[in-house]
Image (cartoon, rainbow, N blue to C red; front, side):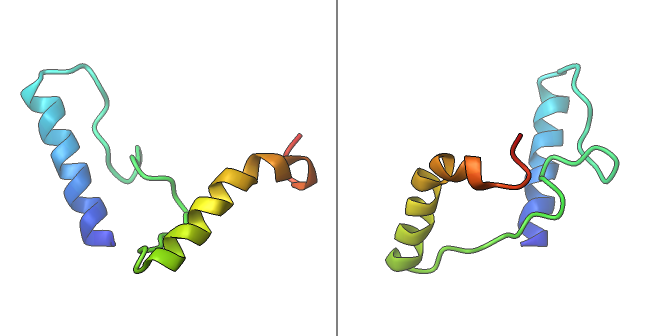
Amino acid sequence: MAGFKSAVNTKIDDYIDHQQLILPKYNRKNPFFQSNYHDHIIRNDTSFQNIYQYIIDNPSNWSDDSFHQ
């Protein structure tokens, strides 16, 4: 997963350079990916369906979330 993230960051930085965009580069001080995030590779349809259902149901659970204001 770390290699994938590194490759994506490199591609994004190359795109920023190629297009001469006025955007900050992504690095340890300016990450593209959310830190402390649990990465998970979806390996089968059951896993996909469980994650899909979680995403669909999650907004209705926000009122029960201790971090939601």
